[in-house]
Image 1 (cartoon, rainbow, N blue to C red):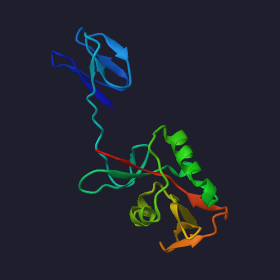
Image 2: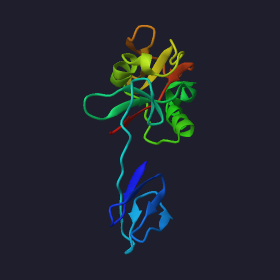
Image 3: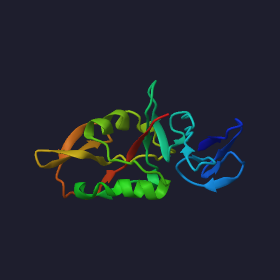
Length: 172
């Protein structure tokens, strides 16, 4: 949500409409248009709620004392693929959530905050007990985390059927 303030100090909560000095508006996505045609963006992100709540296009799984907040894609965006096709999770997350900036986490990120915060991945069942692919590889094998015990390991990259779930970080 953006907040546009005109010269008189009045404002309106908007998504894509911006109010200019004369009180008229234009549909834009980048800022607020004034009489001279210049613009200013007043972007305010909502503060994240409780862990496990909907936020930023997915579920909030971790919010350190300072930003960014860690978001896991909705379970409907989870894919089951080989390591070579794991990035389909990013495309699926964007399609399901309408948000950009998704990525398949590294093995370390998949362990923490991923596995460590798995109970906040959404309503149960929110994750699979299967293995999840990470974005990195070691010695020609794909890295992943087993969600039955949280251990990281390497797996044959052509092995299909392992899960991939995208994450994103949101500054608040």
